[in-house]
Length: 285
Ligand code: NDP
Image (cartoon, rainbow, N blue to C red; front, side, top):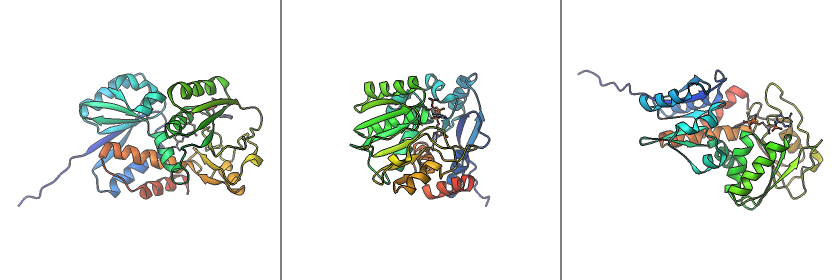
């Protein structure tokens, strides 16, 4: 009797620039293989010029979802049918989810961070300081506010960007938010409970770069998190660990945004250990 074959393959896309060394692709392909799923994660090097056509192709070709990275995180929005709550607040989409006939924009960056943070601390009722006001800071600030943080302090080099983020938090969430200009080495207020570096300082190839921060203001009661995944052990985390703080690396956030995206696309929970191991292969653990 002829053997039955099932070659049905499901596709997930990533749109953006500089995708040749996209660690998310490696991580998700490993997860699909580990779970015996005939799914592929395909990078499409794409700017904004042909984004509308590309999203139409997603619908026509039956992609099961995808990621958007720079420069498509904001510009993809008009081509989608609706946005999830936090993606709507942040006005940025990094994950496209197929819901019946609709394409829904979600943001899993901040959710991934929260999941990672949840392993060591519940942000509800906590005073949080975020260094930076770019895309990562925005995602983290909105999710942390929605999770019930009592106060969020934004410290940013560009006051305009910092104040914009504070304005968003004040007008669209319940959190008490304030902006502090970043002048010289920043001294943390004593009552800070969670510090998050959401700047790109310390990212490869500038590994080891020093964040302008008075490390003598770090105390052992604080949780210190970094968004930098490459390298996972940043100078900030090393300094914080030396001062007795609880530290959290950027790999956890990257893994968890992938875990949440995987769940959105497939309806299944992936093995996050397999995904973290895939990233450690790329970045070193
Ligand atoms: P953006 O370009 O949107 O923002 C960069 C931020 O860093 C801005 O606040 C910028 O300040 C600040 N900054 C950069 N250089 C300096 C400096 N020398 N001194 C002071 N501030 C500085 O980038 P993203 O927010 O998208 O990404 C930030 C980092 O987060 C990247 O390293 C990225 O890889 C990482 N990331 C990690 C994720 C993960 O899953 N682990 C997910 C997403 C991002 P200013 O406004 O003044 O320019």
